[in-house]
Image (cartoon, rainbow, N blue to C red; front, side):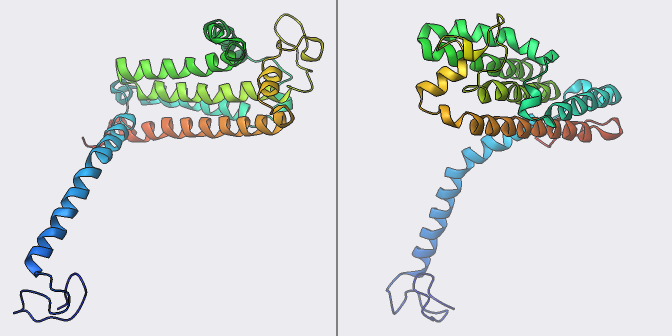
Length: 247
C-alpha cells in the first residue's frame, strides 16, 4: 500500500503517513468530496447536451407510419443537394435556379430590416435575411411540432443559401453578375453591389474569391450534415418503428 498523497509505502495499520503527515481517512474523504463536486459541476452541461441530442435525434411521430414517403422526400433532397454541391462557383453564378428565386425575397427583405442600422448593415442585411429565414422555419418546426425531419430540411436550405451567396461574394471585384434591376456591379455606383461594399468597407476586397470558396464549402458541409441528420432519423424508423433515444 502507498500513501494517496505522496505515494510513500505504508502499512495497513498506519493511520497517517510518516513522510507527509497526511491522515489517510481524512485525505481520502477530501478526494472523494472533490470528485463529487467536479462531477456536479459537469452534470448541468452534460445534461443540457444530452437533452439537446435526445430532442434532435428523435424522429417525428408522423414518420413511423409514413417511412416510405419520408424516404422518397429525403432522396429527392439528397439528389437535389448533390446537384447543387457538385457545381463550382462559376456554374452556380451563371444559371438562375428555383431556390435562388425563393431566397431572393428574403434577401431583399433583409436589406429593409437591417437597413435601419445604417448602410453597412443594410448591405449585409440581404445575406443575413436569407440565412435567417431557414433558421426561423427550423426553430418553428421544432418548437411547435417537434418535427426534426422538417428541421433537417431547413438546415439543408440554410446550407444551400451559402451556395447561393458564394457567387455574389466572388463577384465583388469583377462585377460581372447580373444584379436585380438589370445592372452589373462594374457599371453600378459604389454600394449597389452588396459584397463589393461589404468587403471594400472591411478591407477584405482582395480576398473575395477566397472568402467565396470558404463560403461555398461551408454550405456544402452544412448540406451534408443536414442529409446525414435526415438519414439518421429514417434509420431510427426502420421496420416502421420510431425508436429515437431513451429519455
